[in-house]
Image (cartoon, rainbow, N blue to C red; front, top):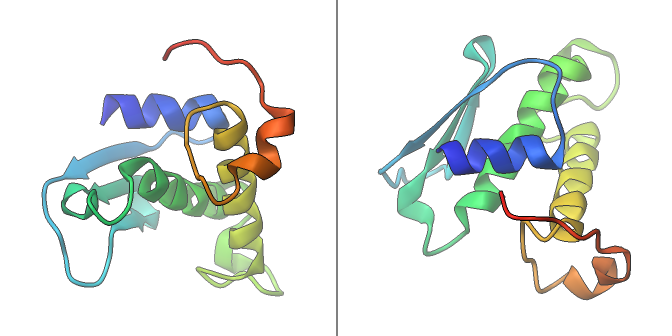
Length: 122
């Protein structure tokens, strides 16, 4: 959990503190969850064969940023949990994580490779 939290902060230092838990379960319907009122990210480790824990953590971190820095669902417009504003934040985080070498997405890595930023060990 400490590694994932440090990775997220390395991608983008959010303005509000958050808690990150890695839980060794595999719920049927979700790989992770963001608990809005507690600013808590839960990553379910049972899904690691299907999806990297880094990707799950980044997804949930995007929810945290969306809710705490961009007013999440409280504004007019497309601010649903998975609305266009959430996906813009998530895409930016994934792109930056890839450029920093913190996440490897072979589908898009060649697109962002040209802009790779050297990054030391965590």
